[in-house]
Image (cartoon, rainbow, N blue to C red; front, side):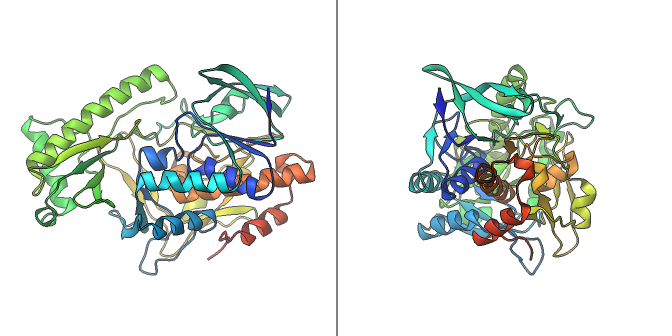
Length: 423
């Protein structure tokens, strides 16, 4: 049996920020991760952070806090740069994933966050709506971890699911978003590659499919430059899967994703100027999953909240990103907010309904399908994590359920850590 004050399951960008925030508040924190490194989607699938800025010519910033500290460390190493998003969803930040892994490790070490790699949550013990422990499986067998407050940052809401809390998403009325295996292509002639547009590429994709010689499920997608000269990262693959939490179906999806990687690369090499001598150098460690379980929380963020720019009294994260729905067709659905408008994500969306000591952070938070499609970006997940970590520390200090903490105190501590609560 292991005991800690705050247990965080999942060391993606939400879980890391949650763990650091709770540790900065003086709490003993254990961060559990199934892989052997930190970062989750932000280091093994993506290399770009969305959501820090609003779309539009004013380039207004809406997310700061720990995210800013992470970015400043990358900047100090010349390991990131800002660029315009291909789809007009605001300035984004592209970085070196290996450098980000180290930034995360340094921050965890500096704030005394205890790490446990190669461990996965497999069960929980719970009395009424109070979680007592999480059982993790490792190469050393299984063991239980007790905590005062638990934060589920697993992405799939695994702990909340095992604890019996309600969820939407998989098995719901709407299909979850499609999956993508990302990949990197190097040795590109950048001068030649600058002679065509994304619209040209999309037209060539249609022509390639029409020829019958290629099978490209998504006739759009994008690539962008990276921190490495002559190297691009892609977001093209599209795999349809109704339940990415089904490991048997997910295995088939992984295989399909890998096959698509090679098919899209073949298309790029054959059609795109400057790619004739290119090399496929890597694909994501696992397929990228956008949506699975979305917990039913004390409040559920809706599409109307997003598009109307709703601001909540318990808002803890800001977002102005468009709804980006990678649906089950060959094209992505984009719905934009009004120029320079934004909404806030309420703290209540991080609390499974009736939970006493369990919070969630990241893409398993409480939102409808459409609202989730606009607020699952890395910047917002970082913000949710920071808010959950601070909230956990307050619940411990106040000796109260997570849903009864002082919202005023939570927002004061967020502001003290340079989190933006308005623009």
